[in-house]
Amino acid sequence: MKFHRVVIKISGEALAGEKKTGFDFELISSVCAVLKKAAEQGVQIGIVIGGGNFWRGVKDGAGKVERVNADRMGMLATCMNCIAVCDVLRQLGAKARVMTAVDIMGVGERYDARRAIEYLEAGEIVLFAGGSGAPFFSTDTAAALRAAEIHADALLLAKNIDGVYSADPRKDPAAVKFDSISYDEVLARRLAVMDTTATALAMENNIPAAVFALADPGNILRVLNGEAVGTLVK
View (cartoon, rainbow, N blue to C red):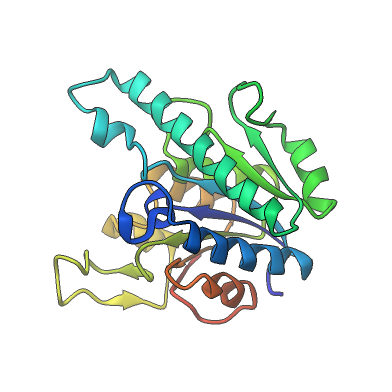
C-alpha cells in the first residue's frame, strides 16, 4: 500500500446513497467490506463522517436555530453516522471503535490523539465522531485536524463527486476535472475541495488529499494502492 496511516472523510450524503437522507445500508456494507480489507492489509484507518444525511448546521438551521446550536446538532448527526458504520464494521468482523470529540456517555470514548494512535497501531479502525467538538468548524476541518494529530500520511475525501473540477460539473458542462492540483491553486481559485480552514491546515502540515467518488467503494483500495483515481491535492 502507498499509504500506511490515513484519515478517510466520508460525506454523510454519500452514506445515504440515492435516498439522499438516512442510510443506504447496502452501500455502507460495501464500504465497510473495503475498509476491513484495507485494515487487514496493514493500513491504519481513521474515519471522519459528515452529518449531511441528517442535518447540515449552517444550511438547515439558518434563520431557524442559532448557529452554535445548529452546529452542535450537526455534531450529533456525525455521532449517529459513526455508530452505524462502526456497528456494520463489527458485524463484518473488523475491529472498530468510536471516539468522540465531546463527552457522550455510551456513544464512544472521549477522543485523545495518543490513545487513538495506540488503537490504530493495534489494527483497530477508529471513527472520530462529533467533528472537532467546536461550533463554526466543519467536518472537513475536523478530518484535516485529526489527520495532523495522528500523523496521517494522507487524507482521503470520499465524496458524491469523482474529483476536483474547475467549476461545479452539475451546473457547468464545460467544467474540467483535475488529475492533480496544488493546495495553493485550490485556495487561489476557491475550488470546493474542502473549506478554506481545512485546506490551509492540510497544506501547512504537508498532508496530501485524494478526492474521489464513494459510489464505487473499491476506489478506496485503489487510492491506497497509489492508483490515479479522482484528484490528488498536494
